[in-house]
Image 1 (cartoon, rainbow over the protein chains, first blue to last red):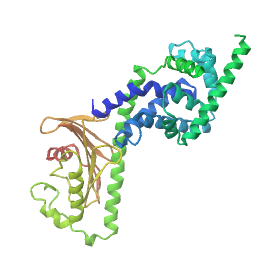
Image 2 (image 1 turned 180 degrees about the vertical axis):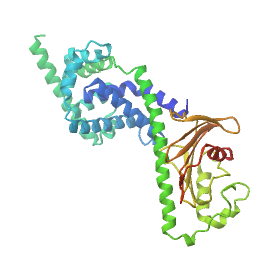
Image 3 (image 1 turned 90 degrees about the horizontal axis):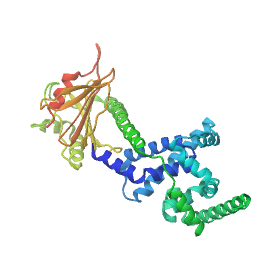
Image 4 (image 1 turned 60 degrees about the vertical axis):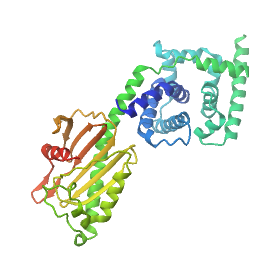
Length: 172
Length: 218
């Protein structure tokens, strides 16, 4: 196996799950997330020689993932795909791979996260789960660090509002 | 902070279905991409070479000095001085590019046609790769792509052929291009040759011609 493929294997090992959950959190479809992750790593493979350490590898890969998700929505828009139907369909499936969907459905907190606008959701995911700094997220998203901080603050406020509302309505 | 801590815990405990089969699928897709990329590169190089040939025709054949060797004599090798009198600026650039590569780039001493133009460029999309184009006097072209590293050539339409030193190479052809690819000593080679156009029609270099080119690389 050539050097480049070994490198790709390592990168998939290190970042595969992170990229999958990021793509999933944006598109909210397991099949689409699978395809997007594949596309992301093909791009990584294709461009790994051009990577010049201007950013960290992780930031670079997340930037590719974000661009692929954006591209997906562009094409999805033209195909008039409605993701909500797909999410409903997958959520009722019993396969082991749909465990992630069930967890999200059954967790008030995760549900609150997934009710956020994508721009807020990605900031929370990247900062809370992936532990990326606001500066790194700003680099990935292509906006100022201050904007990311502000999005994060609002996102957490909204999650708290949703979460508290759900908990109150459940009577717990 | 408590909410964020709880959120982090729940997000990190999510069972993410990115497993071995995903990785396998991606590896297969990259191999497929590699093959498609090589076919694409072949076509792209052919387009460049035809463009270069046409440009030479447009800018005036009278200014072009043909290489003083027949179609069966070496184009490179012991006596490269003959080339210098022909396209010294281009040859200078070719040498410069080849010497700038981080590995030794060997070139063929035999080509199946008389060369009127030679150029070398690092491939901007592939690391440690150089592409050398040879254009013939009848608009033939031959592209040699040399890359550091052992490339797995996956092409179901190709057939295995042996080089003189016993190395196995993959030969494939269609109506537009003949291709020979192999890896040797940590370096991968891909020869793509286009047709010569004569009054009798077009002729592609056959398997034996490409093998001669490959065996002359030194």
